[in-house]
Amino acid sequence: MTVFFMFIKLACKIFTFAILLRAVLSWLPANPHNKVTAFLSQVTDPILNPTRRFIPRAHMLDLSPLVAILILQLIYIFVP
Image (cartoon, rainbow, N blue to C red; front, side):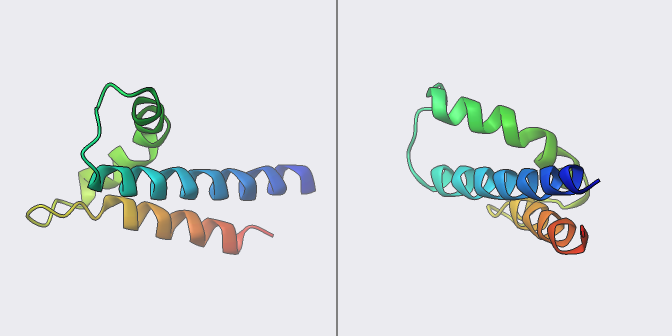
């Protein structure tokens, strides 16, 4: 079971980094058809879309990446 828990922790780290990178790139005027941006969207959308259903936008501010990162960090902390 240790390998499974190590995989879960690694996945949490990778997804956290990907969400942070996507959030930073969203502040920059980037081409949405860029390969990196498209890849990050494809990887992080399965995590961000469920949080977007429950957390509405606060005017121009999307808080779903913050909530998703908090959930990922809680999973990372509580996995043995």
